Image 1 (spheres, rainbow, N blue to C red):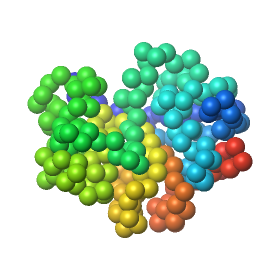
Image 2 (spheres, helix red, strand yellow):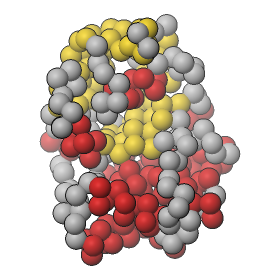
Image 3 (cartoon, rainbow, N blue to C red):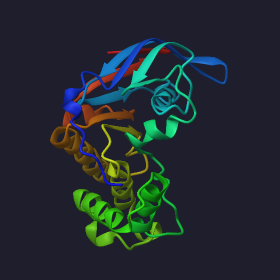
Image 4 (cartoon, helix red, strand yellow):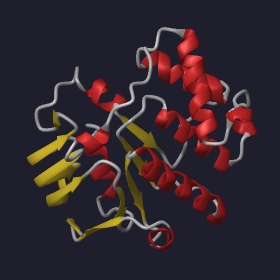
Length: 231
């Protein structure tokens, strides 16, 4: 298996939500959610802790169910998606976590190789080529054989971005990607995500409470307030 270069620009919308309600622990997290995202868009999801940002992000990769309304991502209906189809959906999405979620017992290279094997890449040479490509893309080609604890927070987050890029996603979701980083390193990470969106036509949705990023790295802004999503 090799990474397919998809022409995302041919898609009108990657995400389309209409009148969506999201519950967490039987309580309404967000209601009447209406929004769409097009290929190549850079979108901020702003809001305080507990405002529903993460719940909304998790519906996008079918971690949290959509209770009502219409919710589509790529060609999947999130109201009716089968459990068998969820892994295929997630292969089209790159996810960047705040807490990295790297496997501590293996190198950066082995972390990425684990993901490729798990998503159906059976050819070792093809895996090695793809890993080398994404590591170069994030400026980490010389750090491939370091263990996570040997990397700084910013370097670990670059490995996480490389992991998100492995399967050439049309959408990257970044949930507080700079939350564990110092301000300067956080700016570098945001600049890199912004560049990926502009250069490769990948839609990027960033959940954050840092309003300063919007000034430095312009994008469309959505706000989670009073259990609603507002533009």
